[in-house]
Amino acid sequence: MKILYLLITLYCFSSLTAQQGNTYSLAQAVEYALKNSPGYLNVQQDERSADYRRKEIAGLGLPQITGSVDFKDYLSLPTSLIPASAFNPSAPSDSYFAAKFGTRFNTTAGLSATQSFFNSDFIFALKSAKEFISLSHISVTRTKADLVSQVSKAYYNAIINKERIKLLDANVVRLKKILDDTRAFNKEGFAELIDVERLEVQYNNLITEKEKTIKLIGLSESLLKFQMGYKLSDPISLADSLNVNMDNFEELNTNKIDITKRPDYQLLKAQQTLYDLDVKRLRWGYLPTLVGYGSYQYNTQRNAFNFAVDNSSAVKQWYKIALVGLTLNLNIFDGLQRNNKIQQARITSLKNQNNFKNIELAAELEATVASISYSNAYSSLLVQKKNMELAQHVLDVAHKKYAGGVGTNIEVVTAETSLREAQTNYFNALFDMLTYKIDYLKAIGTLVK
View 1 (cartoon, helix red, strand yellow):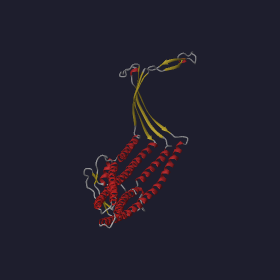
View 2 (cartoon, helix red, strand yellow):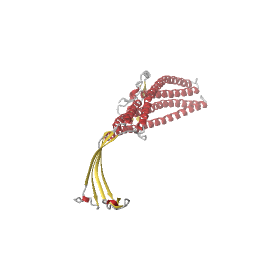
View 3 (cartoon, rainbow, N blue to C red):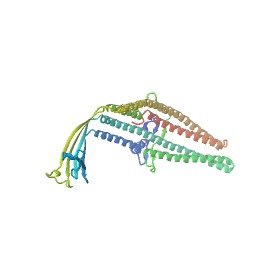
View 4 (cartoon, rainbow, N blue to C red):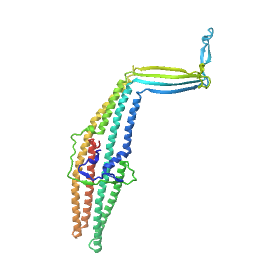
């Protein structure tokens, strides 16, 4: 699997070939995240659910068979009014008498089945379900790209902070030495107390910055763990280190962007297919539906609760009921409701088509911004690297002059401040360049495959 680990040719990462304990290279961190990130695991489950949804819809085209048992206990039998003239022709026409018919206990048991022979809604529901599976697969790809981007940026941030702490350690050692020397000079009367105090302020600031950077390392590692789906309380070590090759700058091309590689474009295309299917489904809804059905039942009526008994007595037999039939439903006139639904579906489809133009412009803009930002970050990186070298040289000269008694500690303090500022700017430019390259690959849809 080709992932972001190979994305920057001007940075070579020395990686472990295998994961050992809690030590992870960038590639291993991404692999771990793809197996453990809750968000990514959920979209994978959504993809599985979409497949089951398709099977559920396909099941509607199969015969639907149900079984039933209906038991009735007439605590009081229904009363019917019968015209008296039915039994006495001379009785008045408005004369009735009440009679109760039937038995107390009635039971019906049987099977019923229906089979749809033609239903346009089912046909298009099945097609839509297949497209929905494609939509779910694209969602997995998009979430994967987001996860790779997040893990990679968090990993870069962590290793850059570790590189920063190395330089801060060197700064602390160097400044501590000159502070100790100045204190010694002060005791001997060769340096003023204010010189010591200036250096103490500078030293204290440097220690504070180092402590803050150490905390930032912990914070960046916690962020990395979170993106990976890694337990925050468990320790983690990063196997990769930065080896910067300033000569291998890669110009990012924004002239020929293949928009079809972007997951969000693919999602839009899948949605368009669904919207078009919805228009066709509504159009086909004017066609009739044909459904076949059948029922096979047994019924018995008893005056006593003795359903297990079966003999020749009329009230102790089970009577068979069987039927088959067809139902044809025709849409003759629905008050133009379906036509209005079709027009609404068409408008939704047209709106989605307009979004294609919008996403093309957005992709071009994102890629252009990332490309320019990447170039600017590289230019800044070159400048800040040169500034670091110059600041280091100025500091070395200031140290020598101060040690030789021809310079002031103000020059040393100023040089130390300039060096730390150049180092900070250098690492900021480095992180910006790495992240802008990620953004560029994500914009053109080649971050993951």
